[in-house]
Length: 458
Ligand SMILES: [Zn+2]
Image (cartoon, rainbow, N blue to C red; front, side):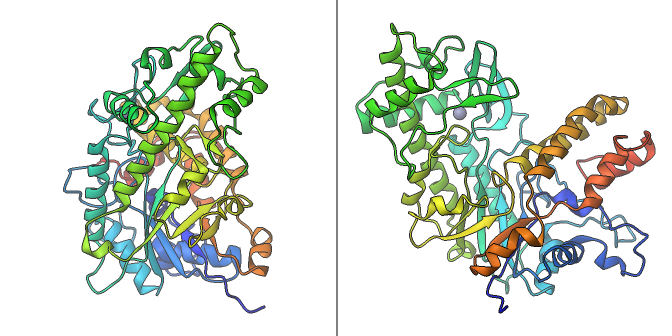
């Protein structure tokens, strides 16, 4: 078979570089047990060919892997190869990417869950509780993202090219339901102002935020409810191609779902919800365009890549799928089978991202890891209480991955490109060991792991 497919190796989190390949495999020199060469050899073992490109994360759940001009926490782990406690940071990883003759993509996650000390940036839910993640609608968040991108670009040698920047869109607007109670984000003042502005200007409709923020029997109850093991939401609030429905069709879908249909309020609530989703969509698109339209000269001709959710309307990102067609994009990376749904995006290269829901489960997993690290900093004895959640998230991640050669055979046959996020088994095993999920507790090795994962622990 002549191989046309080029393949991208996606590094979902920088803490992967904190783990060395087992010392038992001593036949391999150190440099192949650590860093980019380690991940490339893992990829080659899995797929039997070498990737053309490597996508490095410039934001993580715990910080950024370089010295940031914004003073953000540097999560670059200890360099296994260094004698004097140096760090393996973005600059070194990039050097290894080019040394291995691979192309370079840089990815960023706009949630910035580590940058949460300031209420100013935080998400605000409908109960007015803050969620410690940055609100993507705020221009200041977008400025910070652009600054992170500029800092990361400085880590790329002058004579080398960046192939693309990747914006990973998941869980921008977290939701929660508990019985009758439904909580939605974000209702910070910036979100309210921007969404109202779009609604009035583009749709001549005034939104009532006091109604929309109702956590009991409010407009969101028409489309969201407690599903037992998570929030249930109506997935077909758009037509087959992901285009927005008219108000009457939108209402029919809500009625059919039958989540909540108090005849006294249905007309008003459904209209509020309808214009809210339309306006939120416009605001999110504006944020994406702003972040991807960097003025940095070194990013002028790079490919603009989006890893979106694949629902016709995504509550998590506030986007209608068809809206993406209006954006200036070069590539879309979407879950197996879902890439076809973006065929309306002409001139956009579609690549299969080899996990269910793209980076959703990956982000959830690494968010939890850094959450546990922060909790253990405060109370090293609290490891046991984290085990059930770590087990659950590891399992969810494991089940969402499609990383083997069988999964890619159909893609190879059709010459379709794909992106493989690598989370090595060494990484999962080490985490399980140090958190005592597999064997007994070992607090020394736990602290050792935390030190290597970075996060400011010395
Ligand atoms: Zn907001």
